[in-house]
Image (cartoon, rainbow, N blue to C red):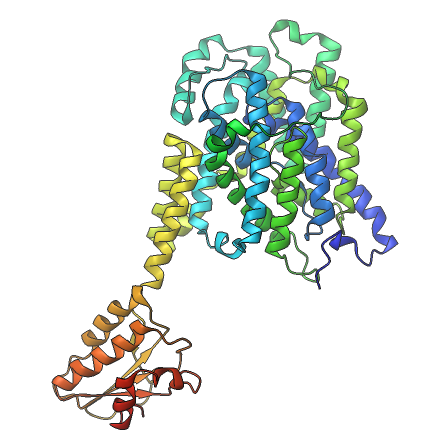
Amino acid sequence: MKTWLIPTMRGYDRSWLRGDVLAGLATGTVVIPQAMAYATIAGMPASVGLYTCLLPMAAYALLGGSRALSVSTTSTISVLVASSLATLPERGPDELMRAAFTLTFLVGVCLLIMRLARLGALVESISPATMTGIRLGVGLTVVASQLPALLGLSADPEAEGFVEELVAVARELPELSAVTAVVGVTAIVMLLVLRRVAPAVPGPLVVVAAGILLVALSGVEDRGLALIDPVPTGLPSLSLPVVDDVIGLLPGAIAIALMSFLETVLVARTNRRRHEPAIDVDRELVATGIGALAGGLTQSLPPAGGFSQSAVNLRSGARTQVSGLVTVGLALLVALALAPLLADLPQTILAAMVLVAVAGLLDPRELWTYAAIDRAELWVAVAVAVVGLTGGMLLGVAVGVGLTLLLVIRAVNQPRVRRVERPGSAAPEGVLPLVLTGDLYTGNAQATYDAALGLVQAADLRTVTLDVSTLTHVTVPLLNTLRSLRDDLASNETELVLLDVPDDVLPVLRRAPWFVGAEQEGFVG
């Protein structure tokens, strides 16, 4: 029987506590500023990212099955939230925020429906090439969206998509703020250097602290350095879903639910130690679904497992989700007491953190692998990325899912018959040995029939043997294929003989009247 509540803390050993606490604190110094930065990608205030580190993270800590997974939000989720909100009619900032929280709540509903319908395994069949295309599209979209904040440019509210945003940035370059650009580029350099020479040092915390000190001690904001919107002190207020927005946001909620689940499971499996229990996809659906429902009611973005923050958690010694609860406690401390300090945080610092965080998404080596192994997968990845960049990432996800389905259909519709090659021994003269390599259904039965006839090339064949030992399921297309193949060969005075028919399959085959008569004539060897 499954233990649904706090599964990672069952049988807790006190010796783990120190590691969990230190890991939770270390992860918090990375994930809190990073989540605040990701909120800006979605067009939300930084405080929304902070709130995503509260109830959504706590819900996963209490229900999730991964011991080292850290859950807040990700760049992919933030881009999809922005794309979903862009489909709504124009509205004010407050209405847009309520729509975003409604979207988060709907993501939770979709994840729980996926669990009830047991769709976890089906969703996991989305091809790696599709995920590569989505990551490339998201990475480039994020880069374009963060350039104005990084360089101190005015963002064009009319610009939509990667190309238009790049054009808008190029048009505004003469108005670049030198102070903003220097601070932003310096933050990027600091993050990259710390990652390389001192990976144990929380780079995001260092650059956030440096940015705040710079503003507090120099007054550099008077020279054009823009600051983030003030983060209110206290807990988030209740945000109820807006019923009128449900229909318009539902397609986006479905896409985000898919990506939230896939990212969470992928990161959870990547960070699982060998001795730990396997990741249960049903549990992950419930944990992320409840987290999204809680987040939708408390002004948060949809949650998902993050690669970088989970890596920090694992590397810092996390043994259970106690570390996640410690991170929640740190986020709570920031919300209740330390929020005023964030008033001096420059926007360009958040943009720098986002750009460094998404740099890992722009890895061309995956495309080179697809090019070397399977060109079809390469074109899927490229198509998803291009569609995402030109038509929006929601459309990119939809195209990716559709192309995955085409790849699956292509694979399962391949012929399931081949000639038996026995090294060192030849088949008797006039006999052609074939083997059925899998079950037949409507999609591959005709292709198998055509392939079998194509193998029967010798005019003087007396017998064709068909090894059917791999059969596990009898279908009408299978019976029709066997009957047609037998009849066509008989017209050329060639006998078809089935070999190694499984004991549990033979009684089902005998339910077809023609098969019984054929068996009596030696059809089964």
